[in-house]
Amino acid sequence: MWSKNEIMEWYERQPWIVGFNYVTSNAVNSTEMWQEESFSPNLIRKELMAAAELGYNSCRIFLQYILWKSEKRTFLKNFEIFLHIANECGLTVMPVLFDDCAFSHKEPYLGKQDYPIKGVHNSGWTPSPGFRIADDKNERPFLKEYVSEIIESYKKDRRILLWDLYNEPGNSNRNEKSLSLLEDSFNWARLCEADQPLTAGIWAFQDFDMECAGLSDIITFHDYTALPNTKKRVEELLIYGKPMICTEWMNRIADNRIDTHLSYYKDKRIGVFNWGLVKGKTQTYLSWDAEENCIDGEPKIWQHDIFFDNLEPYSKLEAGIIKELTQNENIKIRIPIREMTHELMDELENKGLILRLYPSHHRNIVDWDKSVGKDIYISSKKAGAHKLLSVTINRTDFSAFGMHDENEEVLLIGGEGEKDLFILFGLGTWDSFMKKKKEKTLCEDDFICVHCKYNDPFVSFFTICKGVLHGEAVAGEMGMPATFYVTEPSDIKLMIFPFNNYKITF
Image (tube, rainbow, N blue to C red; front, side, top):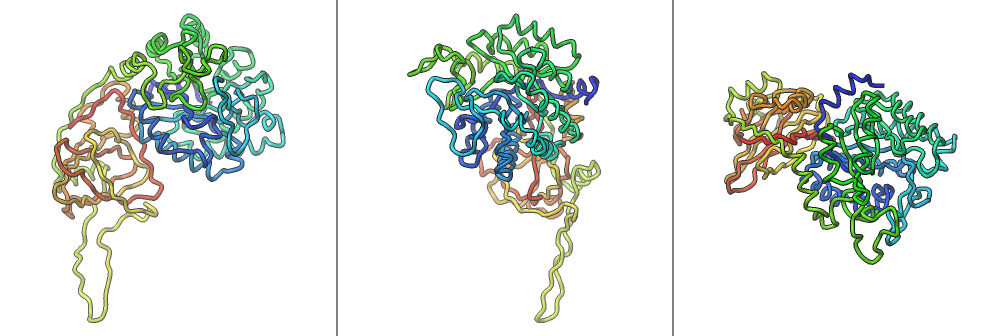
């Protein structure tokens, strides 16, 4: 378990966490979100991008045990695709492994999910793993394997913010019945020694769920009440001496709103995940109380969710507040441009940012009726299996600035009429950049911006070393988007650095 000093240091390295609980708008529950028939990467990308543009930097998602048990390969593949898309959008992810919420009053099931009941909030939601499985001691080895396999696979992955092991343990009138699985889930997860903290949220503020505070590295809680009561709950949780994240909030009907609570949470530096993003099949824009809902039309006030299904905000006022509170601290850094030369290549290599690729003498002498092939450029064998990619860049900022977990060879082979290409290198580690970002001390001295040169075998072919922060952009003039080539391991990931309150220009 993390010490109080360790979790405080971890939390201080994070931006102010502003997230949302996410279920795709085409899914009635977590099973439908992840199963192959209804898993929709295009929809996920569209919805997450809308959230990121509003100012969100994280999302909380619900995994489903029965899919892991029955369709493991597909489930894990879809989970990886989701992490990749979220990372491209600049969002970290908080996965939830178990869940006692059961609005549908059904056990989870495979196959086509029931269509939502008109006028009923979250009518299709099922728990994970389900109460029958949770109470079956013969299932515990499989539940342990589920927790262990997922966390082991991603325990050093920066795309994962933290692990929420159990959502609302004891809900659905289970109370103390869930404590056994709650405690086991923490024991199993601790054995993985993940780089991310572990938590389970306090939600009922009763004795049985207050157990979560003692088990968790960081205090998470749910609160859908008006601000005076929210403040009382926060005061109650201060006794644990740990950072806090409210992983479920926003109930407009109960005066728990963006305009009443978000600035309070920011002032207290409490991370937040409001419930819901897009109006969809969960129907969480409807009230918990069915009598308050308009069966044949919109309710007068949405309980949860931020966007209509066309991704227009439900409330322009709320959207403005989110943007203001997440983006009103922009710090502009203008990076001087340096031309790509032999000397600059040597400097970048000496700083450990790149490895130069040198061409050999490529005119071979051969006898009649013979042929010979020789290495022209040689990459380290440690890099593993590679693929060749064509990359086209048309963005004028460094919004995809981040790092790969493996080396990446770059071949700047371009044609006429292409826009100028610029590569921005960070002169520090991920952790040092996060620390400076938090302290608001990032400056132009932390970067090198290179104006790339095409088609020169001595300066246009090089390897960007793994772990080096970098990004590409083009100038804003007219012309063809810049295209270059990279060879990289087939499973390389780009972990995007969350600039958030910084605007990097050149």
